[in-house]
Length: 594
Figure 1 (spheres, rainbow, N blue to C red):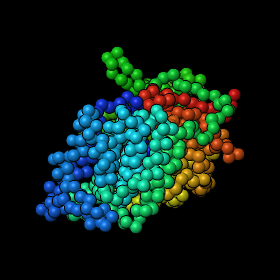
Figure 2 (figure 1 turned 90 degrees about the vertical axis):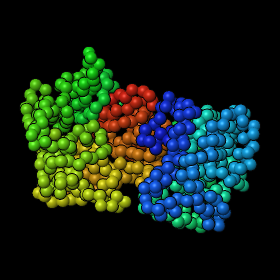
Figure 3 (figure 1 turned 180 degrees about the vertical axis):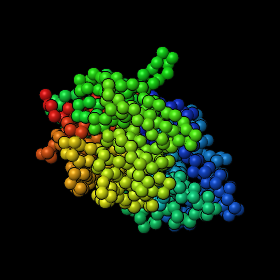
Figure 4 (figure 1 turned 30 degrees about the vertical axis):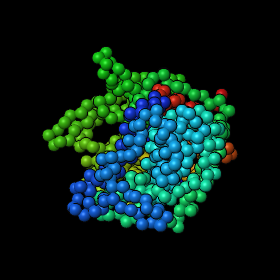
């Protein structure tokens, strides 16, 4: 099913971050430009791609009339015609002074027009009749959702999240009077004409990759290529009705986190400097972090420092490139020299302040360095050499066997003598894959966690356990249903040469779309950037599941990243309190409750 959110927060979530209030207040012209860009994007793309194909593509994109018995004579619009003369753009551009004539026309035609026209009707009703405007908005939401679910191409469905841009003022109004919106939604659900099959869902189905691929191939799309069988429509309508009934019922209720805030006074320190880069634990009591400072000429420069638990710091220097910290070692780049062989000689200071040792090595860019893990990057590059840097103690290893053909296999070393983690190449991204622990004796042990749910920050070494914890990124979009009772994870014990499968406690009260996990001395931790509620996005935060199974919230904030100390006592986390607020880096001590 589609995510059950319809306002700007849902749209912002689709883009990967929340949208600030300032960003939401776009003017009518810019809003319309964005909306029409989306409404016509699929048609324009299909038209342009089809024009590059042979003449058969012209046949694929001509006007057609659906032969489906439940669609009647619904017309499938030629994308070229849509680009030349878009009736919706013409309607939207008409001044509000024409509402007296336009509103009755829109109401009379509501059952033969696609959902975007109902959003437009809601927009025009809003100044004079807010109750009716909310009800028509709810009808448009239901029909858009129903049409999207009838598309066989799932890539097309998320396009409905752009529709709130049509009626921005109405959406803002529903946020100010949630109770009235909930009542309007319930009235909409009670309508006998809530769902209609007289309008083709092609308006949204053509938004997907299948339509674009068909144009590239010069292939005419059969109805079965884009439309779900009619036998499934009744069930889809009932699912939409059920989801929306719950959604509208929640509008008049507070959306507080069901997980209570902790009453335990854990010590918390906010570092008094702007931490803009990555950060990593040097040991259980010292954190290495990068700050950005502005010089006299206004040029920004990175500075590296060791932070103590009381918030004080010891300057290290200005890294000339990458840096790394872990297991009592700091390595930071001081020089870079380009060589004739297209390689670079990188020089590092390695050790601790006052006891640096200079080391150099030759590498070709790009290379996989520990900074990707300690900077909380979830992406990989394609290394140009067989060398990799360990994010656990910063040493480099070269292994052509693990690197594979053209050095394209992803892997990284653990602590010296502990082996490495190697990832299975994605032959089919829809199939589960297993990363492997390659022991120091060369034996490969598959990890009992789906590789697709792992990122570089999924691997952490905990000295108090003398083991590595492998934590998946739980994502709602990967699940068939709601949150499970626990999430599969694993421990790697190098000294014992074994892997232990564990299940991290979870709970159905979770409201976040993505969650990360970590062990600690106090219990299981989990991090969520935001909660998805019937009122849009709310702050997520840091949660603790105690050994007795009780779950409590340690911090309510928008989480950006986190890092648990190797002794399992402290968690450093970068966060901000609002969409537009500055990021801060806090340290929470779980072993020293006041």
